[in-house]
Every structure is written in structure tokens, then in C-alpha cells.
Image 1: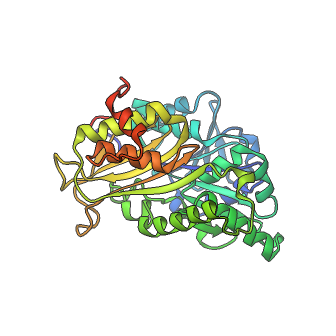
Image 2 (image 1 turned 90 degrees about the horizontal axis):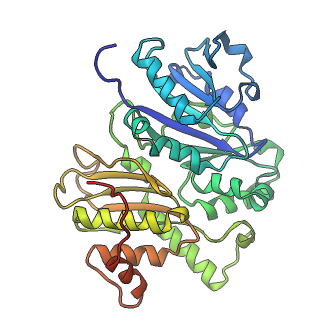
Image 3 (image 1 turned 135 degrees about the vertical axis):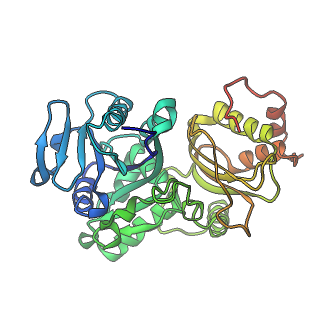
Length: 376
């Protein structure tokens, strides 16, 4: 095959044991728009796609009747992705339009995300598009309260799909939605039995749009201003005893989702140091970060950032701003045990607005850790 292959978007499908990932996956694979998709699962026997089976090879790659491929993960996920890329480059399979990774129910999603983000070779050929998390309408609330993996699966999602809604009562559904919105106020919540959840568009979360080869930042970041309003109400409620339908402390009130909006271009070194210090000193608390940034050296071409804990995609320059009328820097962060005020003060310190009431953030900027940089 001549010439470089296009970068392939990767979608993560996660959810706790029994949530209904396999049912949703089977339904999605019937959409013709997901032809030429590779589905990576941990154990082939866990997924009921026998009716789609055409041919099984000895090395774990199965061709399906709709043009999809199914791979069993026999080693590291990175090895599986590298094998798929090799097959495309050597012409053994036709170019893929998307990869869907279905995690095990007990999986912490962070290592899976890091496998896509963190390996330099993989990052050259694959881009993380988004995370779809399936939540059981009947058992979801209790599962989130009892298992930190389920809590993280919800917190890092770009979209939340509630399965088995017909089996749950109205009050039960309302309580579950309250929990989901509390943990992840920006992720749209969908009915797993609805039409929207059964189409390929479910995976088009927007970090990487294969039809345009650019980041659809407007859809990806959602509406950060609405998010800020929600966060303000959310923080007000927790700080002043506002009544909620559920006890947020039982499922980890230390998880926060918030936005940073900045009106002026940022010096590349200041941005690099902010990211390096945040991820090196507090990476384990940074569940996800997504951003579009106006960088001072070329403010007409924004930089897109995407990170999970200590691992970040290489920064990508867009050809132009998605909305020419709005050239503000916007960052969305999901953290666990990391105070929003600290992150904001640290950002202000690097962008020329140190806060006198939080000297710890300024002190950190005076002694940055010597770690490999995210170059801009």
C-alpha cells in the first residue's frame, strides 16, 4: 500500500459487569456506517457475535459479515493496535474507519485510555475519539456506590447510555440520573433502547472526525459556559447543604468536572510548564483533560490537547478556529481529589495572574519539576 494511512479514530466502550455493553455493541454492529471497523475485546467468548461470524483466523482476528473485524486481546492492547496497523500497511486488511475497544466490566478505564494516548507509535496512527459508558438502570446506583471502577467509568465518559430503562421505576431512574449528572455533568445521557444509542453516531464524540480529519471542538467540549453554570450550582449545593436526591458522599464527592476559560493567547512555555507540572505532580488525580488553546506564537491556529492522568496526546494544531468569533482558550478537566481552586490558581500563576490568597500555587511555579515536556 502506497502512502501513509489516515489516522484511525478509537472509541472506548466501557461499563460495569452486566451493564449491557455486549447488547449495545451487537446492536451497533448492524449499522452499515460501522463497516470497516475493528472491535477489540478481551475475550471473544464474552461477545455473542456468532451470527455475524464469517471466518476465524488462528491469530485472533475474526472477519464479520458486515465488514467489521473482531480481535481478541491476547497480549497488551498496544500490541493488538500495532498488529492492526501492520495488517493495514501490508494490505492484509483494508483500511479501517474506526476501532472500538470494549473493556472488561471490572476495568479501570484509565490504563486503556493511556494505551491509546501514551505509546508514540500508536499515537501516530490512532486518535482517541471518545468514551461511551453503559450504566444499568436497575443496579447502576448501587454499583457506582460499591465499586470505584464503575465510578471512574462514569466520570471519564463523553456519553452515558442507560440500559434496561424499562425495568426501572421512575424514581429509581431519576435518582440514577442525579448521580450521573453529579459525577459527570457534561456527558449527555441516552436511553440504551432509543434510536440514538443504536447508531454509529454514538461513537462520534468529536475529538477526531474521520470525515474532516480535524477535531470537532464545539461538539467535543460541549457547552462550557452551561457547564460552568452547572458547576457553580453544584459547588454551591455541596458547600451549603443544598438538598440532593442522593447522597453524593457515598460515591466519591471528590470527583469534579470543571472548565477554565481564558481570553488571551498563552505563551507556549507557560502552557508547557502548566501541563508538565499538573501531570507530573498530580497526574494520578487528573482523570481526563480536554482543551482548545490559543497559543501566542500562532493564535490564529489553536492547539488541541487531550490527556489522561500523566499521558497526553501530542498537541495538534488546527488549521483555524472552529468558530472564528470565539477564540478563547477552553479547558475541561475531570479530577479526583484535586481541588478546582488549586488548578485555577496554578493556571493563573502561569498565565500572569498569580493569586495572593493561594500562595501554594505560586510556589509550585517557582520550582517546576524536571520532566519531559509537552512541546508546542
